[in-house]
Length: 254
Ligand code: G
Ligand code: G
Ligand code: MN
Ligand code: NA
Image 1 (tube, rainbow, N blue to C red):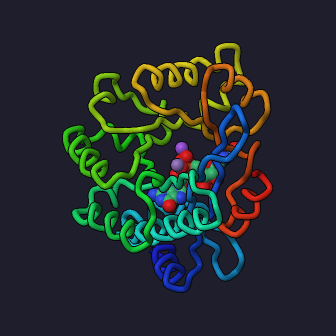
Image 2 (image 1 turned 90 degrees about the vertical axis):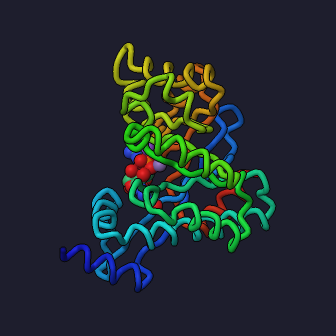
């Protein structure tokens, strides 16, 4: 309860901010887009992890306002990057299942696109595989409606759930994100790359893009590249950074 109050106050006092982690092409190593990630720094200077405060935002309902703000902030950043010449850059935004289930979610998304002028085809929403496993019929319908706005959809933390091939085929998704745990596994054991390999194959068979997350060293990047994984994000390439830092980082990347 205390953290809930602190979060509500913190949100209204601009203690929340959004950072961006570049996503790179494993072939050229050039940045193709970024994932928006929420951060909270309290007045005493400490950072609270989203793993801790997002569940609180969810059960308190604060995630509705916070999530809308993240969406708009990330879209504004995308528009600014485009104005600076990064016209093929994409922006991925995490969506909580509480936001997703909210009856106004589609309106919120449409209004954010309209007000910020962000081009929908360069905006991606990330939903988790666990969300995808609940209420399949509701999700199939919802994704179809979201797709009509023009935004694309990724399944985050992919490989941690047990989505069946036939179910995945019915979902209008564009990309699978290989969960960090499986990227870590790649260099941890002899058969460590088997799940990553399976997701790359699955993506190929279903015509979906695949991105690996949590790539921390060169060997992981090499193995993923050899498996045919086109994209990756992780500390090896860049840590999440402020919008301002991202503009600078991209200028050096060009
Ligand atoms: O950025 P970090 O690795 O600390 O994120 C921890 C978790 O918080 C991840 O699961 C990430 O998806 C989630 N997260 C980060 N930013 C957001 C956000 O804006 N909305 C939601 N719903 N989850 C987020
Ligand atoms: O669940 P989701 O994929 O949205 O979470 C992304 C989180 O992973 C972010 O909080 C981000 O800070 C973190 N992250 C990004 N790259 C790496 C990495 O290379 N290693 C580790 N340990 N965490 C990472
Ligand atoms: Mn994510
Ligand atoms: Na993830």
